[in-house]
Every structure is written in structure tokens, then in C-alpha cells.
Image (cartoon, rainbow, N blue to C red; front, top):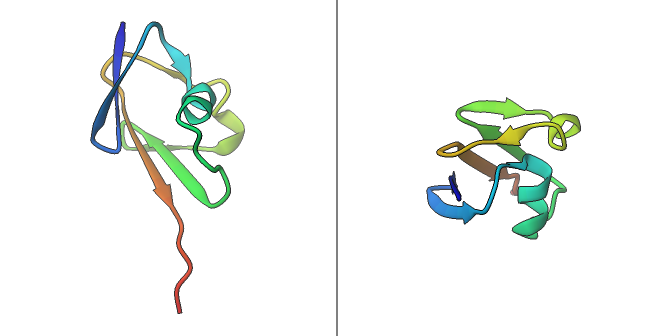
Length: 67
């Protein structure tokens, strides 16, 4: 079992998973978001290859429109 903090909420998973798998499991809309793992931004093209480990901190930032 591994624990990953997503936007300050702890999530538990049976095994390490790729960032893209996390996005899919949490059913997050991918348009207009940026993701950082342990304070480092991960390019969307690297989400499938970026493996998350125990105690990683993931920050998902959603862009908003304003005027």
C-alpha cells in the first residue's frame, strides 16, 4: 500500500502507479490543468511514464477563466 498526497488530501493505492493512472482514477478533466509532483511540474506528455511513489505530493492546478 502506498500513500500519495493529492492537493493536501491523502490517497491510498495498492501499488505504485503512473501519474496518468492517478488522473484516470480520480476522474479529473485534463483540459486546462497542470500537475506538479514534489514541487516539480510534469509535462502532460510525461504523465504516462512518471511513476508515483509512496509519500509523493501531487499538486493539480486547474486554470480558470476570468475577466
